[in-house]
Length: 400
Image 1 (cartoon, rainbow, N blue to C red):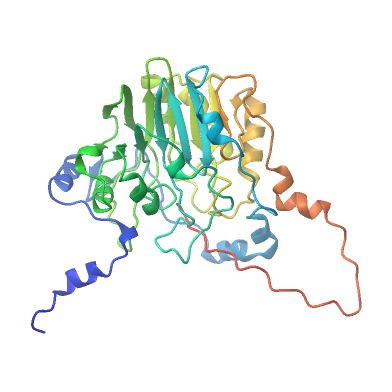
Image 2 (tube, rainbow, N blue to C red):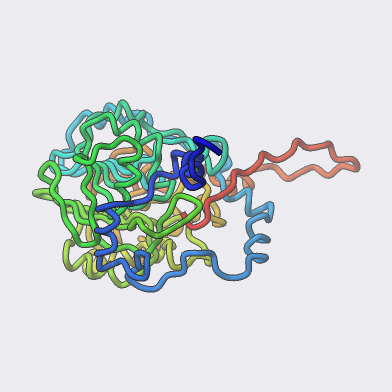
């Protein structure tokens, strides 16, 4: 038809903005030169299955079993810490303070600078505003009220780590973004200028505001659109200031590389470790709490040192395990190994190593199992009253 666009550009025009953009040009050439890129895709440091394994029939039975569906969400609204802004106005006494905002989003105040990891302020981790996993608690602090941030660090481009509404809001600030190789294509597509991007391959380092930021290996995968080309890298991150060092795992399965990262960059004053959204159906790309604690010890040279902050749990329903299980598993693993673990309510600032660092299992009153135990037994009757239909569970994101 005269004047019509060819098929490929027309299809591209229909692509949701949240899908981002594919790397091209000089960025794509740099990706192809990466030592971590082979056979047309980025490679994991050790082999990993990135799609669910095992019987899909058995997975479906587990997924749709009523009692397990109920336990995947809290029984009541998850609390957030009420006075975050007032506390963040005061500089940390030790020079290091972490504020877990939920899931993998953490504000780190380190040696006079502020770093925001994997900020997700959107209501859903999904390309669509009407579908996908919805928040189980409010954002503790409005993004506009958070104040200036020196660096935003992105671990990879999955929706629960790279959030379009959040990036668009941050694009209007002076914040510099540190991202894995290829992820910059998404950010430029959403309005972040190229001069505010630091795009790193594994084991590359950049300096931002006097901090050293290093992209380190992780065992995961990438992709946002219908065609997952594996052309964006995933990473864990090391951030070092004059006095402190911290580590953020991003999403990863357990692998021996944690020991190498610790030997090269540790020990760390604090580690932020993924311990949620695991499953026997994708064992290579997410860690269990026990594996997460093992990774923490590997990063610290095999001895309990520093504080471990569990992340990637509590905020979105992304896996078949009970909502509270990652917290309980982390607490048990820490007690078994004598490791220091911080257990803040979302939005609760704390200084790693401080005597008042939060260490109580705050989630227990909100777990579905606790609510069921506290509920009075049902009264049998010959004709039971009709019950309202159960609330529709939001679809989960497998392997996010």
